[in-house]
Length: 235
Image (cartoon, rainbow, N blue to C red; front, side, top):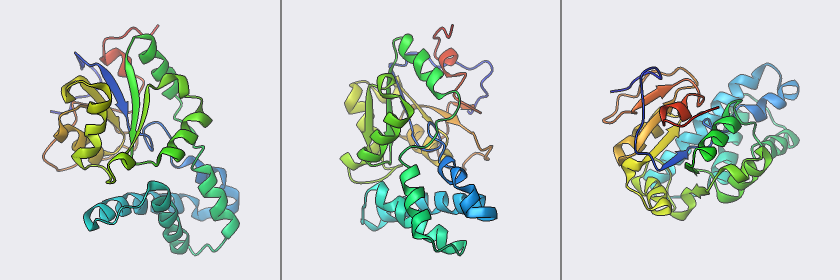
């Protein structure tokens, strides 16, 4: 069952693996930095961009027509700009550049620091292409808080294909049940749970639970309680 953060715990975890976009990095932050240029369409643009970005990953996987996440992100942005009737090449260029240096959510650095101080192995496991992930990690100053940055490009298919989650098992050499996976995306949390990870759904956007044949172990509103759930001291 899905539990709230109160009274929950996760035991025998050897590694904490995080989705990137929406979980560590705020995918809305680039658009918000350009709000003055975009105007009242900013929130709608951001919503459409994200929806199409995810849809294109699923459709490309089903079609067997993989392209890396940087290309997919650009194609989704083109759709979103057209949907809000914006034709501005300089703005497009700026938005794509900002996607390489997105803001992290406020608690991210402190939580990763607590995990590392507690002896936990940590990684990102993301749809992102390696260069865009590495750029984001560097911009956020997270390099020393992560043991690995894992990209779907190593298997050429997007989440929630089980081959993606297997990357973390292969990297850390532990059973799926010894990995705690964090994602803000309900569909990703379900995919990881179906694979066999212990899963924390970081429901930042207060979404209803997905009606799919798997579920997260724990539901949180942010990553802040995670070290305590793992039995790590946070002081």
